[in-house]
Amino acid sequence: MTIHTRTQNNIAMIEIARPERKNALTSAMYQQMADALLIAQTDAQVRAILIHGQEDIFTAGNDLEEFAKNPPLGSNAPVFQFMQALSTATKPVLAAVTGAAVGIGTTLLLHCDLVYAADNAKFSMPFTSLGLCAEFASSALLQLNTGYVKAAEKLLMGEPFTAEEALEMNIVNRLLPPSEVIKYAIGRAERFNFLPPDAVRSTKELMRTTHRKLIAETIAAEAAEFSRLLKTDQAKEAFAAFFERRKPDFARFS
Image (cartoon, rainbow, N blue to C red; front, side, top):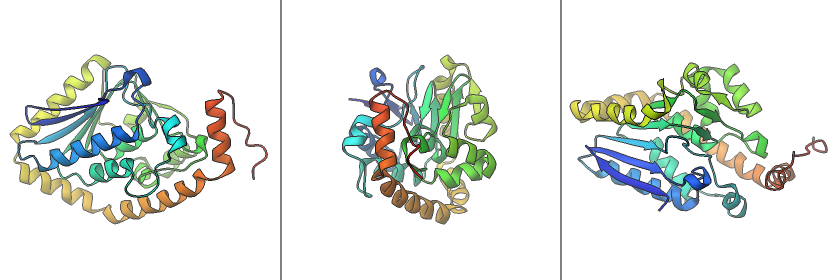
């Protein structure tokens, strides 16, 4: 198993557990996380959900070998099911980020309610570097969090950024030493045991309603453009360069 799930003190814990591959995510792992989220949603005992990795890694993003062979196309793809379950969850979803959060590892944080990160964590959304575009409403949500100028820098350039920047950009709520992040996030999740669940769900729903139409439309637009870009020669060059461990050559493209 590469996704470990358990319920601890009314908290549904979802652990990304493939450290030998830096927690790179496969289709099977996305399906496991989607199923875990749906189970947590229907379990009356669960008050909150926590997604985490290990102390030295959150996730390196997609397993690019699998991704290149079987790109996720269509709403039935496990990654779409996972992100749909995450973005529509009615219970509080928390994330504890330690180490790197690459690609969808950063995107999924934009759909969480509370995010706690290690002070040495690294974030990146390197979609353009792979000849692709933003995914799962990140082009809209990042702007809502931090404004156009900062969002453009991170999405257009695709360069890694620090935990301090993530805090300034309102991607995370608080920074802590790496050894304390998961424990702290569990403590915050357990706080919901002492709050009325109906009031918590209603408050989350009211906040999420404001941008629901924008998010849904952006997810659809990004998915269409993402699928188109996957078939381009620029994306093929980007992926070939990655697997051949060389710098890509985009000079011939316009």
